[in-house]
Image (tube, rainbow, N blue to C red; front, side):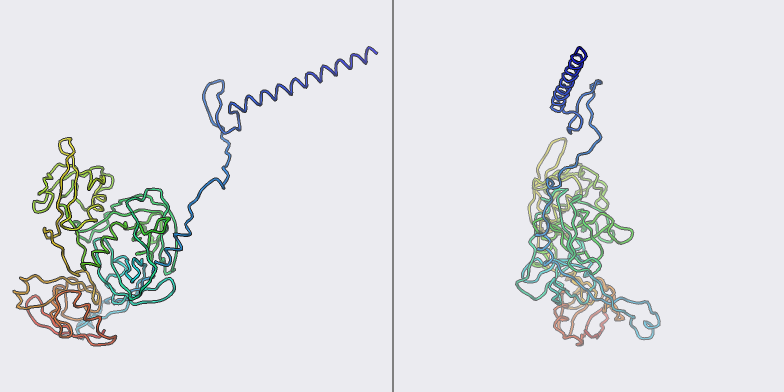
Amino acid sequence: MNNTMKNRNLLSTFLIALCGGVVAIFVYAQIFESKGGPGSGSFFRSSSSFPYHLAGYEPHNISDVSFPDLTFAAEKAVNCVVHVRVKSMQNVNNPWLEYFYGRRQQIPREGFGSGVIISPDGYIITNNHVVSRAEEIEVALNNRRIYTAKLIGADPATDLALLKIEETDLPYLIFGDSEAMRVGEWVLAVGNPYNLTSTVTTGIVSAKARHLGISTTRSSRMEIESFIQTDAAVNQGNSGGALVNINGDLIGINTLIISQSGGFTGSSFAIPATIAQKVMNDLKDFGAVQRAFVGVTFYGGNDNFSNEKEELFVEIVDENLGAAEAGIKVGDVITSINDVSISTFAEFQEQISKYRPNDRVKITAIRDNKTQPFMVTLRNIEGTTHILRGTSEIYVFGATFEELTQRERQDLGIRAGVKVKDVGEGRLSSLQGIRNGFIITAVNDRAVNSARDVQNIVDSVEEGGRILINGVNARGQVSYFALRK
């Protein structure tokens, strides 16, 4: 019996100890959990008093992560982006043909790109390099309908061009506020890469106001470079296509990539909508872009001005333009235009490109450590405040033209005429005797004074019809040419 009592006492002691241990573990666990112990996702203090995180990872529930719905913007944009096909003639070096027959050998060439419908009556914006030197331009809508497009005007300085097709009630994109876009926002690039129509890619805005210094063939005074950089995939054929925000608003025209291979490598660049809309309106209303000038050159020059430079230090002031008149001096540091802060040449270009000659803008600058406002009246390239009307960058048979001055007409003894600015490589260049500087006085016995006049007459001729060209060279020698449309 004594053994039985001893066994019961031992069992009771064991059970009490076991219960006490369970209670102790439970209490300890509760206290430890409330203070952020291991596995709780926060940190706790060790004996060394240094906070630390465990290396374990607890993935979030994917349903808690919010992604933007891009389907609305994509569906809206694809119906407003067109496929642009251009036909032109390319010169082939054949000295025997040129020597014996007085003309150059040419072969047909085709090119492709994209465009964006920006009005219900058929105005389309694209890149100038897509339609440059084109003799025929075709536009295919997303519904596969094909139209012949007319080139209204082009602006090589911004690499933009305006086309027109004869149609009504077309779907179109409205211009958004590209300046309001923030780095990190979602965007879609819509176009026709490698002739694959209605292609949509997505990415984010990587940077704004990029000045790449790629326009080495243009006057630094005329070039406009202030690109939106994105990581949306853009390839050959996307040029002229739309860059849209998640609402489907047009915030840029896709223009170029930087690539050794010619394919997308992670960065693409678009012309901001603020610039594109201004250029489109000018080409539509005046036939030429109304480019405004302040009259200042910044330290380091305007050609390859670095985006990394964080101040606009005035090095030269043109005495004949508005900056000097307003009181801006060498050494001033420009900080804003109409209260929009700027610190790079690209930002300066983007802001000024929104205005026309005779517009007044408030330019804020720092002088002697004091901020001062200056009211500047913008001027045109000629130094006046007049609107410059013209169509100098319209291509006809691959050539561009410029209007004659009154002095040139008097010297040559002619009443009408338009000068060949660049004969290019189109059909006009195949005519022996027509070179840069040649003056066309009449087409089909109708006097011409502008590229628009030449284009209108050529457009009125039926396919295969004969076109007669009268003109004079720089020495006043009269020449006549004929070709088929």
